[in-house]
Image 1 (cartoon, rainbow, N blue to C red):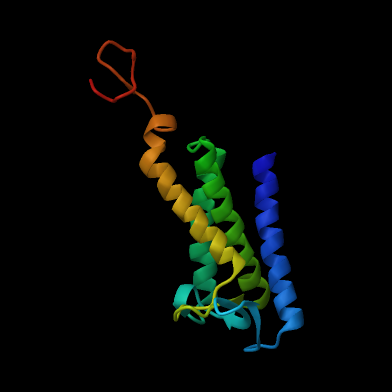
Image 2: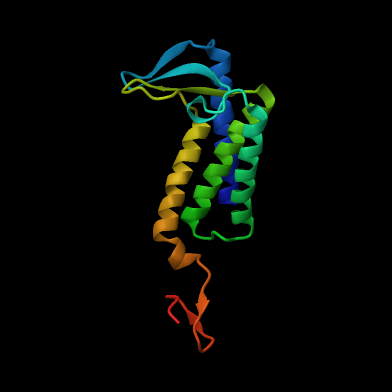
Length: 166
């Protein structure tokens, strides 16, 4: 239930912030957010990260759908059971669906976070969820998967061999 709440919350927060951005800022307009660090600037991104594949909406929808289905399968088949892995998957799904809603409904993704500290592409909350989910998923896979979720191998005598040594 907590994971379902997190899933709904990620999509709702992303869509609410995009709605606020669209109703309060014209395309290209910006307002201070965190002085000298970040501003909110409305941008329409017709591509993926760094505007890659710009204008290829159907290709992006198809690629994103395949990735989101793969993550959903990992969750529903309980391949990932450790809380950190599940949270990572939920964040990736929520962020991916948040951007997918824009791409399907509008033909572009609404971006708004503009870092002022260095030159970096403008991004949105869904992008943050996907990146944080990916980082958490990497941590889970590198340090927790083998211990908690990897299939156990049987030893020569038919008993489980948690180390995988036969």
